[in-house]
Amino acid sequence: MTLERRDGRPYYYRSVRDGDKVRKVYIGAGEKARISHEEDVLRTTGRKARLEREKKDLERLEALAAPVLEVSEAAEILARAHLVAAGYHNHKGEYRRARRA
Amino acid sequence: MHGELELSEETRDRMAELRALSDRAEAGDKQARRKLRLMVRASSAEVVGRASDVGRRAGRVLARSAAGGDPLAEEALCAKLDRMRAEIAGEDPTPLEVLLTERVVSLWMLTTLLEVLLASQYRRDAGGGLKRLSPPYLIQQSRILESATRRYFAAIRELARVRRLQGERRSG
Image (cartoon, rainbow over all chains, first blue to last red; front, side, top):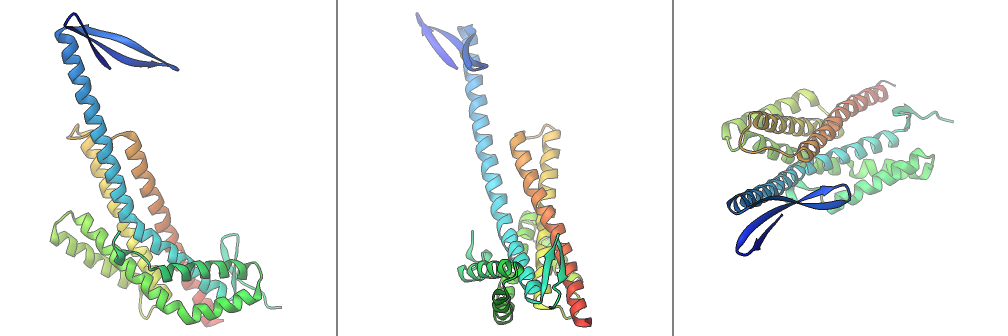
């Protein structure tokens, strides 16, 4: 988005993506240009702040989940180690006792 | 992350070793199975105990988060976790059953917290409330919930399986 000044009068254009190209679309001049530009700046700033807030929220959630997931993985490894040590083996997701020769 | 909520480097190394030995033993390496048996016997109770401790603490942290600063709600959730532990572990559980129980309980707390958070955000969004959430955010949060739920069901299955096999060993 660009606010251009010609002869002291503001002209406002928005950049619009059209396939691979970016087109400049004329929005208005004078007071309309100024108001549209301010609205766009506010909208963009708000969107950036929201994305930042969401990113932090997700990081917080992942940090909360991490210890539980680590313990979960440890429990899985230990359970398997116990079963394998006791002579079981995994056959298509089911543990069976290994046959003794 | 706080150190109390992490497994120690030593425990992680032990896990990696147990995993590698289990892989080799399952592939038919008899020496690896012998070594695994010794290692399970020698260090299992201690490692299981440490992992259970981390799980218990993590469950408490999740309960605090879910309570949102309400001490009564936090207390009620912690009491609920204790009740679940006692009910699921049953009488005289083995150390492994204690850990698998801790895993079920902490994953239950995690899925519950995530469900509540997600539901409250949908409500806030649907009601045209203070903030609209982006679809990528909701998708990512749903993925975390889906992954936790999958692990929760797997944890229940694993506990049941270990109990069944331990029972077979005792009776056979």
